[in-house]
Length: 396
Image (cartoon, rainbow, N blue to C red; front, side, top):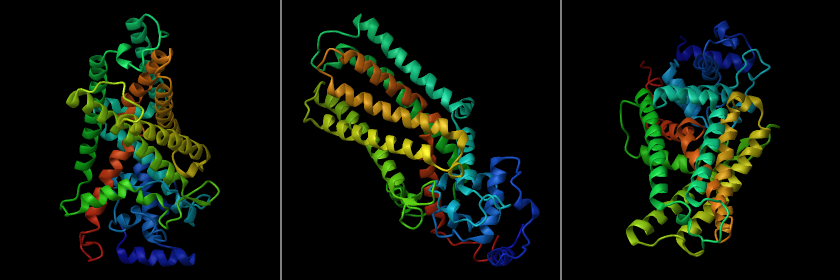
């Protein structure tokens, strides 16, 4: 393994277009695993360092001389896939070094989710994400349509003044969705715990958690490292990927807040649904639904246009399946709100609940997992950068 002095010499030689001491294997993209291929590319980046100020990945990279699998998993989840380093890199394909960091780290992220999934056998669902989403959606819709038919005898009936519990009993809904939500939360929490145990720093730093939360909530590293936003497929910068992520994330939180407030109304205050149009649950749900409709629509549009080297093409079914479920959950929810006083309320309710059930069934084994692992990676980064850089000090 090269020393820091050798890496610095290589950086100068690379910049001058001269031969370097880089091993010949670094010029080949034939690594046996995604982790090994990402490590190969990181070695080249560590010699060049042109992108050092772009995002959190590169400062974290410079603290390392070697890249074992655990460190590659950490760096992969620290990456926000903005694409800036790909478009700035002089060694990107068709160069023989074939450096495409967004693609390499995207492939590793999928391996991270599989390796740390809980229960472990369900990690294979990431490899069949498109099929998983389709089956979950079909199963969720079928379940609620069957329940609606069994409980009401028909999905079309006289208006019920928005009384959803006349179609599905409250206790039945609470039991079913409570069980699915708790399982999803447990599965994601266990996966994050396994990931953290593999990458956690030895020391704790006050304030690191607050800073990591700030970075996650503001999507700090989706600005391309320079504030201009992510790169489009044609090399232009755009802030829209960050904006659509914000609309999606905060739309989801508002919808969750609407459900939480309604739960508080029901159990703590004894106020039962349906709630007035001006009530807090309806206002929060409407605002969240609009954000959760606009955000996924924009992300899907960008996903269809992204350059293949800006991500892992094999993961597109997982990405688009999750985006579609989010959009469908919002669209059916807003349609239900608009038609809650009509004769089709039962059908709209069954469709909405089926999509929401499918969404929660796939949360631990789909694209949503990246949010959980990324927060853990940001926490590690904010701890590391407040500690002395032992490599810079010359220690091992």
